[in-house]
Length: 138
Image (tube, rainbow, N blue to C red; front, side):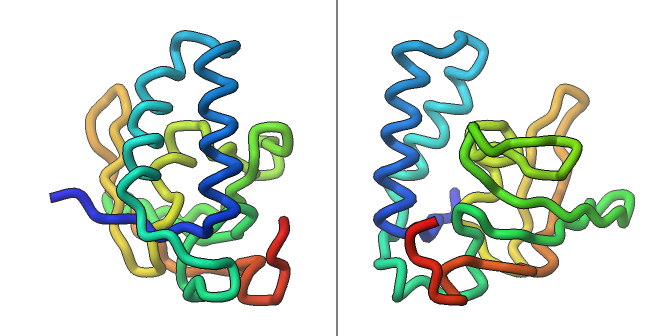
């Protein structure tokens, strides 16, 4: 059974708009991830920005991921496509790993499908979440 993600109403609206733009004007290679993300958004638990728990990955959150197979830890920020910068570890919500972590909670384990198989990632810690600091419109 697939886990239900938690997302703010504002993030959901912004991301659905991005998905629709990408479907209309984007590259065909993103279609599978977009469809998966859209399905997750449609069955997500929607909360107000003020009501979102502080241990949930929201847009502009900074988090520590752990690869459970290798023990490697990686620090990322989940951002909108225009703010993505791999050299700064800012990953787009429309990138495969971005779609995989959105709305999950600290401690959750995510199966991320890669060409060589499945990578198991654990959301080890939320280092920063805008909503928990009162930033509701990032």
